[in-house]
Image 1 (cartoon, rainbow, N blue to C red):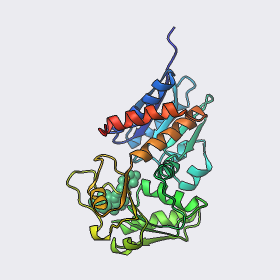
Image 2: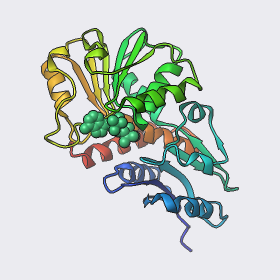
Image 3: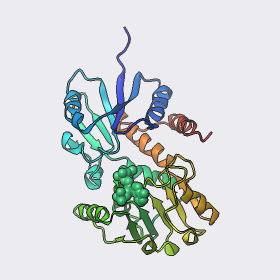
Image 4: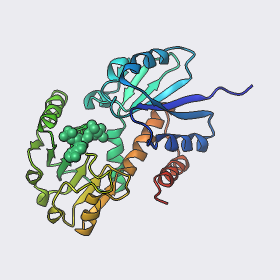
Length: 289
Ligand code: ATR
């Protein structure tokens, strides 16, 4: 008799371009486990019944990722959150136990930090600027404030000022935001003094998208991190490279958040050979090789 496959997957909308199936199916293959990772594109109105189904003891779904726009919406459907997900206020990973208990985790935040470690960049005492105030900015801003080796300052700019203010008001209830300042223009980000600029907006995804910052303010000695990984090099990263800055795109963060999700589902550390298979599959799919 064929062994029943364990199902994992991602919920969100839209999901068409998600690289998560490639990442996790490469891991299952390398681990030689009978499991499959699927896309679950859901409309908001389908969430309730989807989560009800998950509770059935005959469900074969044992783990999920959550992406835009549901990272906050899913929280009321879960039984518990780990402390980090609680602090960040967003969930991108759900572990489902044999007894069908649902626990929420956030691996975006430590995934970003893991990539910075790989890049050999320490945030301690640094001046940081963030563009955008969506879900990714929430995870990154939270982790930068929670870690013991904190930056000196974090300036954050968003096109819609009300949104950045709401984000800060919400995070203030959770931890100390004394190093954070919301600014009302890109100029106020003080990029000349900045050691790390992070783009969390979607500006740059389209080939003809502009760069939100003035090239003259980018300089050697700073790291410019764009969460966008397709295209591989956004206008921002091109200009940053030209200005002599170090650059990185978000494929590393995607990789590390995925590894950390898998470690939560498996409840164990993942071997290096599996991680290599995951990274190669991701880079191939993103047309980097
Ligand atoms: P994510 O979860 O990936 O962060 P999101 O929550 O949809 O995605 O957030 C998208 C971010 O990109 C927001 O900060 C958004 O700014 P607004 O809050 O003003 O909408 C930003 N963004 C999208 N298009 C933009 C544009 N053309 N110019 C500037 N910012 C833009």
